[in-house]
Every structure is written in structure tokens, then in C-alpha cells.
Length: 448
Ligand code: PHE
Image (cartoon, rainbow, N blue to C red; front, side, top):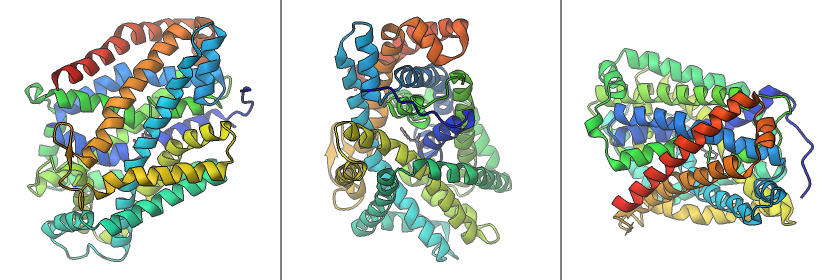
């Protein structure tokens, strides 16, 4: 259980890696879906509040722990706890995070598979001359074909595990970083197009003029889970990255940079998607298919649209690929510290995740009638459990660990922004983040 000695080559390299984990399906696919389902601006406002009061402080906590421990998550937690005479069982928090990542990757891979299908469709002209109605029903038909959905899930998972097995993740991150500005550019282009549609102003007021009476308990709960999910916080994935952080980097500054970019991508996607929703008279609460139906409609309206759409999905897939590598990596590292080689670890996790992905993949076809707990479809359960329940619980425990187990001098050094910042951060975590997390979690469990 020795300390890692490698460091990221530069401060930028750390930021690039964390952005790679943060920006993904959460921003472009799940954010619009959740916002649509939960009534628009009020949800957006809550999500931003949770980002500021929970997501960011816990993100600092999580990376700080990794940096202070300089080990894999489970080892770092055990080491830091034992060092101050606290229970070594804190290491189990690392395992809990690993299980969360496992569950997230299972549906993440299925949805990324949908993007592969759309990439192929776009480049082969599948969307050309289709009406919006046809585009909508094409998505439903696709989801109802179990073989095709499973094939794409398998391809995406194979690509992810192959990179993790061979350990070339950092090379991919650099490529991702090189190409991501293009994704942002395409999103800006889409917003430019959205501006010309009749739904633009409705979309803006729907997104930015909150109607607090529309807020439900589920919306509060979804917003909290999404704040963790989009930042990749709460399951120890970033703890693993913190272990390699350069000694002289300020953690808060890096975290803010990532968060701003992350929110910007979500907002651009939201504006583009909801303009199309309102100009086509669609229902914002169209569920997980929202992005897959609106974007082809938008691009179909642009010159050379099929090509642009294809490029969009290439870039989106690249973004999701780096996120999914970050999801898989800590689990393979965990098996590695138990003595398994990388390829074997990747194979075991890959097979496990593939099987775990079956409920998500088949939720819209052969298992579409299955309903569990509170009448939930399998896909909803597969996303809600790890995102809305497990990430916040993990985040809560990480926050408790960071302020009560890690000793101040060690935490101050690992945050790298001076004592005054540490005090403010600790006060926020103790008096705001932790009580708020407990309140929302309890509220949900008691009222549901
Ligand atoms: N943040 C990623 C996204 O928005 C998902 C993710 C969650 C990645 C947790 C790693 C860990 O798509």
C-alpha cells in the first residue's frame, strides 16, 4: 500500500483529465432530459444551487482525500483513517464508490451505444428527408429492437474496456482535449441555429424564468443527484485522479475551471434542444430519448446536416468514452491491488458491466412491462439508484471523512489554497453541505 510517486506532467494535464471525466452524457443527454421532466427553470436553478453548495465543496473534499492519501481510493481512505487512529473500515467507502461506478457504467454504456447507432444512421443518410414525426418514431423503434441495442452496448463497452486494459487512457484524454473545442463549437453553432427557430424565446424563458410552484420532491432529488453525476463526484473516481495531482497546484481553482466548463456545455445543449422542442410543439418531458429526437430534427434543417450530425455524435462519443474510462478505471485498479493483471481485471469488470447493462438495454423492449419499487421501469431504476441515491450517500460520507477524519494540516496542504480557504470550505461542508445532504436524502426516503 505504498504511496504513488507519479504526477500529472502539468497543472493543465490534471484539469484536462478531470474535464474528460466530467463532460459527457450527463451534460448533453441527461441534463436536458431531467430539466424537461422536472419543469424547466426551477429545476435548473436548484441544480445550480446544489452544484455550488454540494457538488463543488464535495468535489474539493474528494480530490483532497486522493491527494492527501496518494493511493487508490480504498487504500487512501484506509491509510488516512488509520494514521489518525480511526477505523480502517473507512476503506469500505472506496468499495461502495466502486459499486456505484459499476452501476453507472452499466447504463452509461447502453446509452453511449444509442449514440453509436445514431452516428452510423447519420453518416449513412438515415435521417435524410424524414419528417420530425418519423424521426421520433424511429427512435422508439430502435429502442424496441433488443438485438441492435445490445450490439451497440457491446461495442461501446468493448472500446472502453480495451482502453482500460491496455492503459492508454491518458493518450485518449489528450486526443479528447484536442477535439473537445470542436464539440463546443458545434454546440454554439446549434445554439445559433436555435436562435433562428420560433421556439428560441419560449425555450429561454422556460429555462431561465423559474416557477417555484412547479417544484416537486422528485425534482429536488433529481437535481441533487445530477449535480454529483455531472461533476463525476461522489464515487471516488476523482479521488483516484487526485492521487496524481502535482504538488504545487491549487485545487479550488482547478475545480472551478472544470465546473464552469461543465455547466456551460449543459446550458448550450439545453438551449439548443429546448428551442427545437418548442418550435416543433414537442413535449419537454419526452424522457431519455429527448436528445436523440431533437438533434436529428435540428441538423436536418441545416445545409449538410447529416454530415454535421455525424460529426456531433463522433465528438459526443469521444466525450462519453473518456467519461466511461474514468468510470471503469478505479474498479480495474481495485482488482489490480488485489493482484489481478489489468487485462484480466478489465475482462471481469467488462463482463459484469455488460450483464448489469441488460436491464437498461431491454427496458424498452422485452422487459418493458417490468415495474419495480414505486412502479419504476427498469431503465429508470438503473439510472436513479446509482445517480440519485448512491452518489449523494457516497458524497455525504466523503464530506464527513474530509472534515472529521483528515487532520487540518494535512487537508490544508492537500487543498493547496491556504488556511483561510480551508476554514471557509470546512465551514461550508460542515454547516451547509452535510446538513443539506442529510435533509434531502431523509426527506426523500421518508416521503416516498
Ligand atoms: N460526469 C460524467 C457525465 O456527465 C459521468 C460520470 C460520473 C463520470 C461519475 C465519471 C464518474 O457524463
